[in-house]
Length: 68
Image (cartoon, rainbow, N blue to C red; front, side):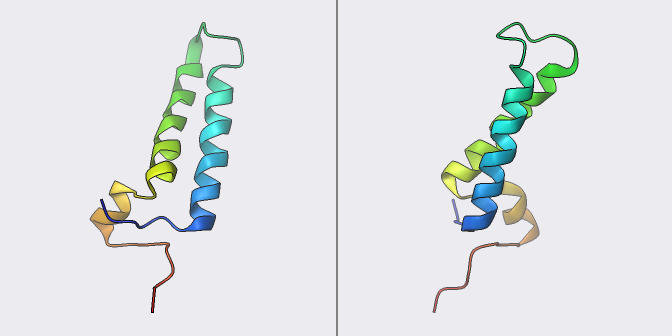
C-alpha cells in the first residue's frame, strides 16, 4: 500500500474518526436510530493508522510532502 496520507491529514482523520465513533456510542453499546452511522468513523481511523487512503490512490492524490 502506498503511503499517501500526510501528517496533518492523519491527525484530522483521527479526530474525525474518534468523534464519529463517540457519536455512535453516546448511549452505550446499544446503538439505536441513526447512531450506527457513526461507526463509519472506523474508516478514517484505519486509513490514518496505515497512512494509506484507497480513494487517494484511485485519484492519484497524495497529501504527503515530496521527498527529495
